[in-house]
Length: 345
Image 1 (cartoon, rainbow, N blue to C red):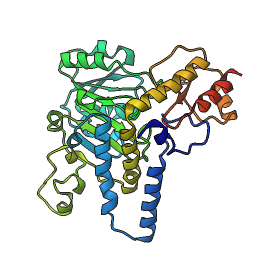
Image 2 (image 1 turned 180 degrees about the vertical axis):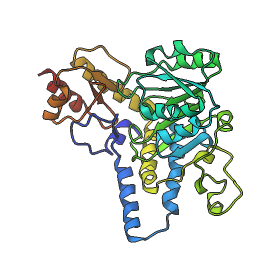
Image 3 (image 1 turned 120 degrees about the vertical axis):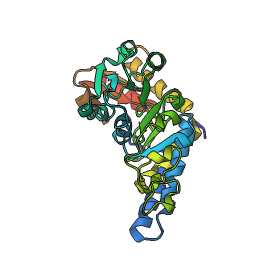
Image 4 (image 1 turned 60 degrees about the horizontal axis):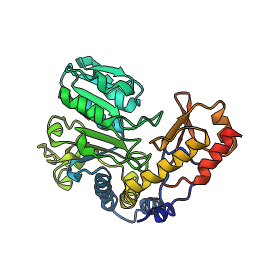
């Protein structure tokens, strides 16, 4: 599918520049979700068809991040998935992370302090320089939530490898617009409800087989079984031998909406979306007299920005005391120009 055809599947009201908070669904996802809700309302079908959406979503996400779908775990939230990793590291592990990172990535590690896990935080820009030999885990966001800054992934990975540290990357603000290769990390996690255009309650974790072998499947239920439909009752523990062993039983309707959205992104390609998004972000930056950037998220300090944009009908966000605007597949040049006019008039 080409970019124009993909863009025709959205119906945003003008001025939506807040995908970094939540993304909008394509018509294919909206229609599928409404149909499932109607089936649920009237009791027309059994649930198995809804459950199949999780497998479709897993496969599409794997395409987006160049992963093998057997390495992809499905869950509900970033913190829930990271929590399994954090609870599985040895006592006394040292975790290094950016001080400004989102708490869904930080809190699961900090919650392990009772068994001696130490979390050191430094500015994101200095992360690679602070990877010392005693660091066991480096956890960081590929794109920072508040600022939109794209991490020095090459530098951080090189430093982590030199220290033999495990890398855990949060790609929530990246997957869907920024090309990401999940195979470069020991673990990559991403929430689905922003740039992946999916309902809230969808998230993914990609792990290497080596790391996964050390993770305790503490939230395992029937859906994590080798054969989920033969895992309803009784022992023994009989989990899948791939990443499904860490799966959380899916909230059906979230995944019904997620599958078509992820398949659309995979079909149109992240590279095409990246060019469109960053092009609009740089149009906005140029209108404010700023140099071009490399992110679909722009953070600027403009007095009264929130009020001025709201008066013009532009929906954005304020994070860290600065205006944050974000451009995605359905954003338009008119959206960017509307925001520029509101902030410069």
